[in-house]
Image (tube, rainbow, N blue to C red; front, top):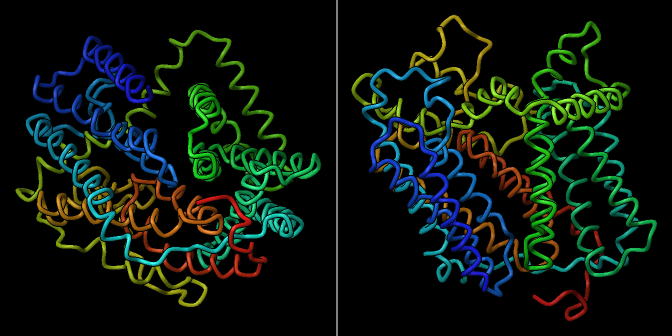
Length: 460
């Protein structure tokens, strides 16, 4: 039944997209992007039909990948709105083919190594959620207070520490969600859990950066999916529907909030900023959606990694030599907190990448451009790098799911880690570099909570 429903939705979506195509792309390009859609749905299909307990990261990651590299083929937004085209149109078919190849290799890395990964020990520790409720509630509250206290504060040295505090609160909140689903919470704890989730979303919303709202909520979604072995489609759809008007309203919100004389974002301004953002979003909902086109076109263009991939394919290595692994040179340093090594190397990839490809002027020290992991592999090692690198990334995804999907302790850690891995538009070192350090730190934190005796927790 689930397979039939998924196939029906995919077929209807694919037919609609093909009927509405407007980009000057070859039939090969449209067919390849269509195949990419079906391949991207494989993780969702596997999650729906299997009883294996897993954290539902891959269904969302694969579909997000398609949004970056497949959907722009069907979008009405100009392909190269934010990226200079040059000879990129001639490389479009190659870029789409590389994107499909990267997706296939990533999925092979995830699912083709499961028997190998099965030999690796897993995090099997169960938290005694009943006895841990007061400590979990206190930890989530303290973390939120720290998050709010430093909202709007830029700190390079203590960034990892603040992230650790924030993630600790998210871990505690994820554990409270599991306790709620298992029927351990009374009305007071339920109100606290809901209020904390809403408060975190509000504090993030006040920044005007919607990704900061989506990532912690994704972490809670992953925890829910792990515990119930299903995806809560209603909240997911509500979140998607809310994202569109909020995304359209954020431009006006930023113009007002970021350019006021008292634009320093602090705890006292959060309620006012959230109210302003919600009011502007309601105004957007009441306006003609055709008036949203200009600002939302820019947003869609920023999510168009296919255009960036086509550009680098057209210029690498003919005009810009391969980088030969340079963007990974600081990977090992991400394991060390900056508070211990304030001067640790940190190549400005966000500026060096666009400078080499002429996207910004060499005198521009303000503009930064994300380097997506697929594109990073290509500019360093070419097509072979895409094949091997995406396979390794898939292997890492599979390894993390294997490690953290066997117990409540692992699931709440995995929820935080996987929520940050949704940032596929950033380079590998930035996204993956801190995982070993933070995974050990979070596990040490959860060791402070009492164990649940074998057989007393939820079945695995």
